[in-house]
Image 1 (tube, rainbow, N blue to C red):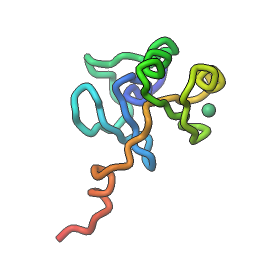
Image 2: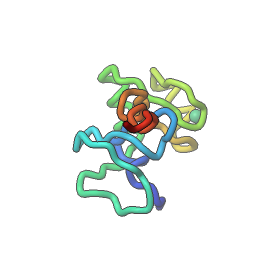
Image 3: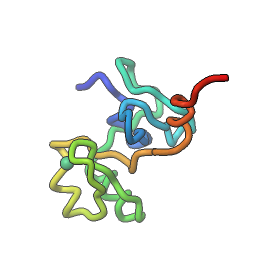
Image 4: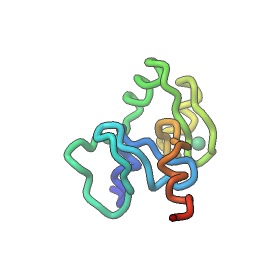
Length: 102
Ligand SMILES: [Zn+2]
């Protein structure tokens, strides 16, 4: 199917600048999506899951178009063709990497 299981998982929250690095919302850890088999929590993103997230008031993000998706009509335009995920993280765990070491 693909070789980046995390990116296609409902629990993965990608970083804005490095989409292959993100936070696993399920495990609460930073993960790197690469050529690994999905973990036991893997749950593939489906259009139904994405719609449910919108209904819960969670916004989505199209990694291809770099746009927020806030309603189902918008979702339909991207899903299937593009990589639609949770809103990417921009917070400290990315910045930490960029900080010079002491
Ligand atoms: Zn798109």
